[in-house]
Amino acid sequence: MNQHTKLDTAPIPFIDIAAQRRRLGKSVDDAVARVLAHCQFVMGPEVRELEAKLAEFCGAKHAISCASGTDALLLVLMAKNIGSGDAVICPSFTFCATAEVVALTGATPVFAEVDEATFNLNAESARKAVATARKLGLKPKAIIPVDLFGLAADFDPILKVATDEGLFVLDDAAQGFGATYKGKSLGTFGLATATSFFPAKPLGCYGDGGAIFTDDDALADTIKSLRVHGHGSDKYDNVRIGMTGRLDTIQAAVLIEKLKIFPDEIEARDRIARRYSDGLRDVATVPEVPAGFTSVWAQYTIRLAPGRRDALANTLKAEGIPTAIYYPIPLHKQVAYRGFPSVEGGLAVSERLSAEVLSLPMHAYLDPATQDRVIDAVRRALAR
Ligand SMILES: Cc1ncc(COP(=O)(O)O)c(C=O)c1O
Image 1 (spheres, protein in one colour):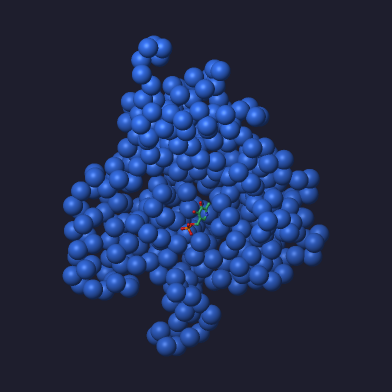
Image 2 (cartoon, rainbow, N blue to C red):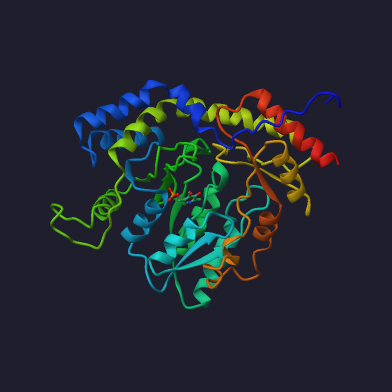
């Protein structure tokens, strides 16, 4: 940049939900108005329509909508009767909900390590964590890989560990729904998949929401019962302990409209991520997408040399460019989770990542000029 050019420091959004709202125009308003007209606010026709469309989108036999991504994970664990004495293997470098749901059932999360390049669960570490759980007298029951920042987890080796050890796999695709692994969409790996429709997610609604995907008919029936207080033949026939876990009809109506533009948005996100990587590859470690994987880029996260992150974040902030740290503390170091066991040998990679990662503004409507501002600012700050 010419040193006489005035630096643009107007604040830019980290995620521009308003830009998407402008693109959707009246379609969302009309969809919500239809719900306001028919007044079936709970389990209205849009809920079933959305579930059919979500199942078709990813190729799963069943899509069951629910109130949040956290409930989606929890409902699967409840349906599988996970509880006290059981162990569930999950990565430490993730959002807390992945392990929170395990603890909520009374079971023990056992933290495993992630891969340094992809930030996703390392299958060999998961296998070691199963052994750690057994040594502690726990019964390992499941593995929860996470499709962190939108990148599909490496399912083949994880599914192999699960088969060898007699466990089921619950994919935490809260950030990754829409991504693929070896040509198949997330939603089709393991026993079940959970996703979140929190507004900031690649496919978000206008409040809280989530969904579960499975090909297992019996599991789908149990989850549908659990999301409405464990109902049997009707809602006043209570055959199991459940919860209020339904998706609101208004949110389903919003999601039906958003799903129409989702494939196009996934393409845009990928284009933007590649552009970031081309602009930053020589100054920072840019995210890697292995061959055969895709990402929906829930976050675009770079990694910096030790000690460089805070100064970079502060410089960007001063120029109106927001950043975020996902996640500053790995779960095994969090107050609420540090009492739970970790894989033998420790979690050095998760700890390093927590100290070195930085997420940049990322959404489908990031225009080239704004993106260039971010790239230029990062490059200038790191050249100092
Ligand atoms: C990896 C992961 N798991 C689970 C969740 C929980 O989703 P929700 O916020 O919809 O409960 C989130 C989202 O915040 C997440 O990022």
